[in-house]
Each structure stands twice: as C-alpha cells, then as structure tokens.
Image (cartoon, rainbow over all chains, first blue to last red; front, side):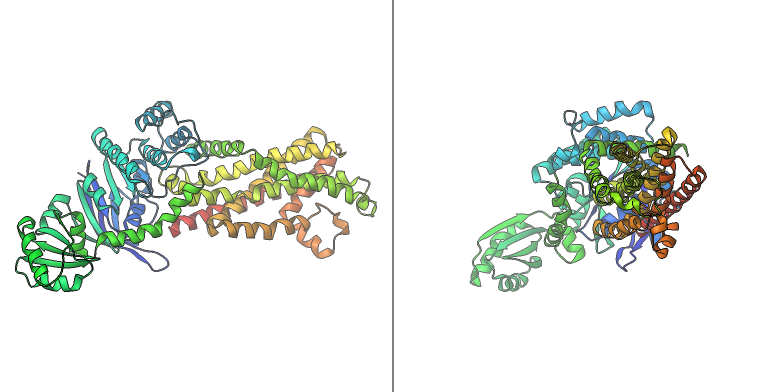
Length: 332
Length: 257
C-alpha cells in the first residue's frame, strides 16, 4: 500500500522559476521517506504541493488515496504538516496552540482535552504548557510544532526541515523523538532535510533532489553500496592539483577529487591503499599532513550522482537561509 | 456552515485572547480619540455659533464623529495581525488543516468588530462625561455601538484584503495612512454638512465614514431614525462589499502559492 504517490510532478512559479521538474516517487505506508537536497532544490515546494498549499503546474499526487488537486479536503484530513517556518502562535500558550489545532483538525470535542494533555506529556512540555510560546526555546517550539502535526493522529506526517536552525544537541534530541514517533505510532513520514547525516539516521528510503529534479532514490545503505570503494582524504597543504595528477596516474585509484587543502582518492580498499598513496605523493615531493579513511556516505552518493559536493552547497544555502530563524530568536 | 461557525468561534477566541494579553493596545488606540475630544472639543467650542450647526454644543456634535473615527482606526489596522500570521507560518499551518477557509477571515473581521465595540463604548461614555447628552436614550446608545461595529467590520475586511494582496506591513501602513485621515475629513465628523465645500459634500455622500457619522449623530439626538436605518443598511452593504473583496484577495493569495 502506498501512502504517497507522486507522478511526474512539476511546479513553475509565476515568476518563471521551475522549482520542481518532473519528480516521481512513491512512499509506502509506515515508511520514513527522506527528500534530501540543498536549499532551493525543490523539497519544500514538493511538500507544499503534497500539503495542498500549492497547486502543481503539471503531474499529479495522491496522499492516503486522495488526489491533492481534486480532493484537497480529503488530503487535509489525513495529513499533519510541520513546516520549516514553525507556524505556532507565539502569543498563545502551548496548550492553547494544541487545542486550537485539534479543533481545526476536527478532533471530537470530548477527546480534545485528554489528547492535548497526553501529547504535552509526550513531548515533555507539561510544565511549560501554560506558558506563552514566546518564552519557549527553539527546541521546545519545534517539539510543540511536531505535536501539533500529530494532534489528530494523521496517516501521513510531513516534516519540512525539522532540525534546521537547531543546535547539535537539540537536533540529536529531536532525532530521538522522531525515532520514537516511528516506534510508537503507525504513521508514514515524509521528511525533508539538507543534512545527509539526518537522512542517513532517520530514513528508510531517501530521494536526492537537485535543482528541481529527482536524481536517485533508494535505501541509504544500497545507495552507499553502489558507490565503489572507500574515500581516502589526504591533506596536502594546498598542493592539490599536483597531488591529484600524481594520484590519477595510479592504477588502483578509481576517482580523484580536489577539495580545499586536500585531495580525495576513491580506492577499492582503503586500508591497503593508504601506504601506496602516501608513498606516491612523497616521491613527487608532496608532503602529506593527515589522512582520513571513510566508508561511502550519502555525501559521496550525492557527489556521485549530481557531480558536485553536497556540504559546500548546502552550507552556503543554509547561511543564506538562517535569517528567518534568527528573526524568530530575536523576538523572544 | 456548522464548521464555518465553530471554526470562526475558535479563531475569534484566539484573537480576543491575544488582545486581552496585550491590553495596552486598547489603551494606546484610545489616546488619540481622547485627545481629539478634549482638545478639539475645547478649541472649536465656538464653531457651533456658525449658522448650519443648528442648536447644539460642539462636544455634542463632535462625540459621534470621534466615536466613528475611533472605530475606523481601531479596525483599519486589523490586517497587521494577518501579515504576522503569514510571516510566522501560522496561516500555512491552518491552510493545511480542514479549517473552513472563510472562517480564517471572518474571525478577524469579527474580532475587529468586538474590539471596536469596546473602544466606541469607552469614547462614547467619555463624550458624555465631557458634556454631550444622549436624548435618544438607550436605543441610541445601542444603535451607536452597532454602527461602530458595522463600520469596524467593513474596514477590517478591507484591511485584511489589502494585507493578503500586499503581504507587507509597510505597504499596509501606507495604504491605511493614505485612506484614514482623508476619509475622516471628507465626512461630517468635525464640520456640519451645510458648511462643507460642495465637492467635499459630494464625496461625503459615498464615504462609509460619513454614513457612520451621520447615523451615529442622528441616533444620538434621537431624530431621523429612518435616516439612521438607511445609513446602517448602507454600512451593512459596505461590509458585504469589503468582505467579498477580502475573500477574493484570499483566493488570489492561495492561488499565488
């Protein structure tokens, strides 16, 4: 059974920007599916279409068996939407926010108080329940956000960049929460992120989106397995082009990438190749400062399929994108 | 319809709660009308000696004008809250629920009407303290509050419509400033109709603020109840037109997403 079916979805905004170009994927019931890509790749637009907030320019999508275009009301009843831009009312308390959300989501009246109470407990906000959201920390606000998406026990939950703007500690706490959701609730989750680590940790399957197109889709471990060999990162103090040309002549080296002060060589078996790589570089008069050996990560998957590195791209976008979050912080 | 009413009610409670948490805003919005009533009322006391005002005191003449002005400015900023909701993602979150779309706007319009009702009541009582009288009695009292609420609902819907189309606080402020004062001065709020230049008189006949001022003044004096009824009907029509404008603006907003 498929909870989400996305079929040749396209979105062109009025200003001519092609945000989503012919994207197709399916998410099975009960799965955590990750849309992975840098900001501006079209992830949020895709989720907004699936949440009926934006109309597709082409293609179609069904959520829990209901078409987002023809039966938007049917979709809305079955989804929980946790947007990147929070969406809690800062001037209300946590309990008030949840209660209003429950009313709007058509939770039966006599169940509301009980459900709100147990959700507050579940996210550890019982003590802060009657304080204004204005006084909440970023992590508390985010947990409230997620609880609001769950108050009507939806079949499908969208989490758009759930950990963007959170410090690492809060992020890993939230990951634990999300894993708990998965264990305790029968629910399909569509998660977007620009953190490879996050997709790797949380998702059953991921789709990499780059510039509006779906590049590759699959189970994270399968995707990684398709990338041959290990990555050996050799710090050569900036003499990267010389180092790269030396390494390219070597037989066992599959691929060489220059990255900052380092060269990255992809080799069949990292541990046995390292001495040979260092020797070759030193023979050419290039000193090696540090060596790291890594198993293929989603980062490598991304690099392999898109032709450019994920981290630098994602970071640049992330800084650009930090301002709305920071604004929220200032207002507290 | 059922969901429309219950959604509107729950959203209205949210807006009222927010207002009650920051009651300073009610006070702030009352500072100006109080100044108008006390200073203007004193400064122009002898204006009523001009032929055209009839047998009245200026505070008697001015009070309904300032009540309506309060209603205008108490409601015209209603769209600011909506822009905050758009920016904070609150609107998107609600649009992703089965919530009745019309209720999202109706609750704001009702909220403005309720706020304006309270503000008008305070200003009206203040006018009475300063020496205005209420020959129209309790009926006049209720009619004036009703007129203020209608005017408030109309301008709130207008403000929310502009907010949805512009989505920027700066633009909304500019629009409200552009309309607010001229609409007040192009009415009989401060000056008798017979003493206006004829072109202002012409504009005043199609100015909702003027309908409100005339209706409130007649009701206060307990005269011309037929005219009060006509002006209130015109105001009700104004509410319908601006509400239609707001709902169309909402449609445009959602389609542009």
